[in-house]
Length: 374
Image 1 (cartoon, helix red, strand yellow):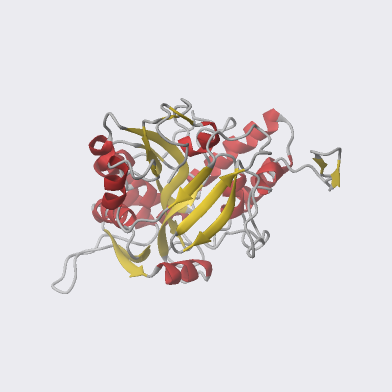
Image 2 (tube, helix red, strand yellow):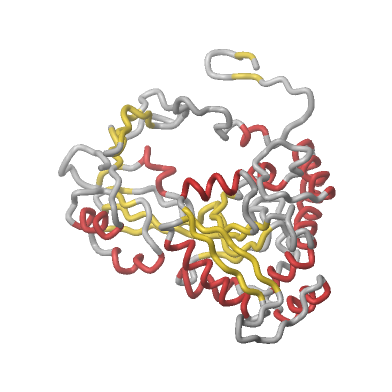
């Protein structure tokens, strides 16, 4: 790495690395301080919240807002009440079932699609999830659109793999998983899990496993219960183990689980799937799920080193098919969120994008008070 003038760095590489620009945004190894290059800089942070001030030297221009005060709230209802009383300017997370309730002439609710997806990751190093047929069967057993309609008021997109479906190289013509309970049952039977008759001691289940959940995450719990109900239709009994967030994190990192329900970042490029689903034996990333697939590993390497558009499209297409044939998880839904913003701010109109990405461009509709976000 060497400087080139006052505002540029040149990185000399031993081989092409198309994913490098995104890799540079991941704060691996930085655990002692906050490092960033945005429009605002952190001035103070403690249990009561955080204070950020604008960075006048921001390369895209000086932000119009001078400071941002972030305050935590015990409940969303308390935050909404403060917003409606004009004590706050933004509530950062509005649940799907509250979008219509909170929107009014003083508050604008701006939805956007996140680069995260809900999924149940399998511990592929353990039985029964060493079998690709078992993992495929569970993917065929779930009605993703019903889950989105029931839990998210239709605000979401079905997910059937780890690759971001809006990436330019993603092949939307490839047929994804759809609900097929007959095929799911057949795959389970072929994998050695025939139907079981009911007994006085237990409900009939051809397959039982335990899914890890973090405590006090109501949305994850609701997602888990909906999937549990659907899996039961094919004779699969998924039970839950609810643990503290600290234990949840430690158990995942240590591989001490059968399955785990997570809300996992998977976009907007292939860099995120690259670190989560590559071979745990050949790549030191964040693959804590034990997934091993030689073809996926080869194709990830092609994606990383290819500078030819045709080669990238071809590798992405084949990687999609590989993950359909040998899925590392039960992929459920790409989810949406919403921000509630006081209408005294003009927010740039970028449909589908998180409005916080443009906060440095926000301006006031009136001159009632100095621009700030509290």
